[in-house]
Image 1 (tube, rainbow, N blue to C red):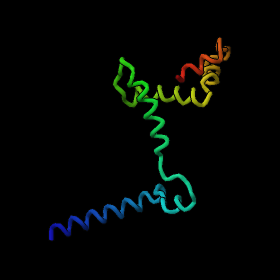
Image 2: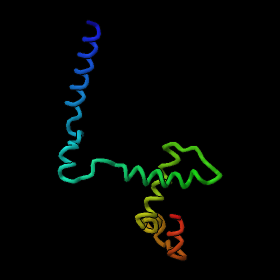
Image 3: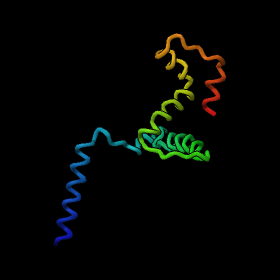
Image 4: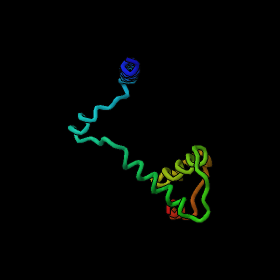
Length: 107
């Protein structure tokens, strides 16, 4: 009888969770039917590739939210080709000596 009470409690907790988060739930069947992506694996793959480049270097650092976020922000700006614009907002007179310098940052 004790097991049935625990199962009932867990089912009730699940139902409450589903009701509370119904706006955030994804209908994967519908997304698949509409040929929309159902995974963020491509994003995770890109992040893993970026981080692995850093970790391959001999001088490894410990990653945490506070050290990796600025790195990823700059990396994304380089990949999106918006880094120079970001510098110009902070330093209006900024002009890169060579446009390839910003491309080399991404290597």
